[in-house]
Amino acid sequence: MDYAGLEANREQLDRFHRSIGKVALEVYLGWSDTDKLAFLINAYNSFTLQSIIDQQSLKQSIREISGVWQRRKFEIAQSQKTLDNIEHDTISQDFNEPRIHAAVVCAAISCPILRNEPSSPEKLEAQLEDRVIKWLASPQGFKLDRQENRVFLSAIFKCYGKD
Image (cartoon, rainbow, N blue to C red; front, side, top):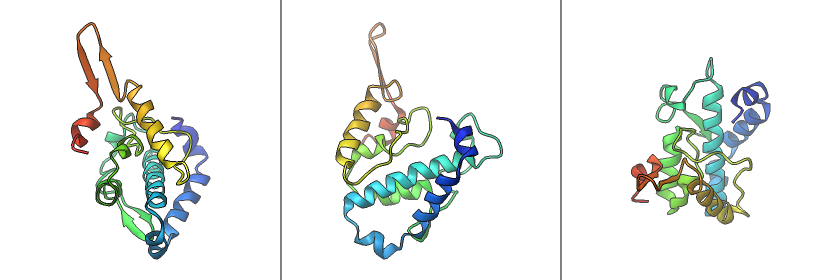
C-alpha cells in the first residue's frame, strides 16, 4: 500500500469520510442488510487508512499507533465509533458473516490485503467469497510448510475461530 501517496492525495478519502458521517441513522436503518454490511466494510477500511496516514510520521506497523482500534473515534451515520465498535459491536453483532474477517482490513501483517475496489451491495456475496479465497491463498492467511509438516494460519483464526 502506498500510504505516502495516499497521504499526499487524501482529498477523496476525506470527502468520503465526511459523507459517511452525514448519513442519517434513520436512512442507514432503512437499508438492506447487504447495503449496511458493504457500507460498514468500506467505512472500517477507509478509517483504518485514515488512522495510518494521520500520523506525524508513517509508522512501521499499525500496532505502533496508540489506541488505533479502541480509542480513536470516527463519525459514521451521525454517531461516533471506534474501529472496534464498528467491527465487534456492529458488524459481528448484527451480521452472521464469518467471511467479514477477510474483508475488514486492520493493516496488520496477519490481516488480509486491502483490495483495490470498495465493497458493493450488488457484488458483496462474490466479493466476500473472492476475499476469503485470495486471503487463504496468500502467506498472510495460510501457509503450508511441507518440509516441516506444519501449517501456519493467520492470527485472525485464533482470535475469531468461533466465527
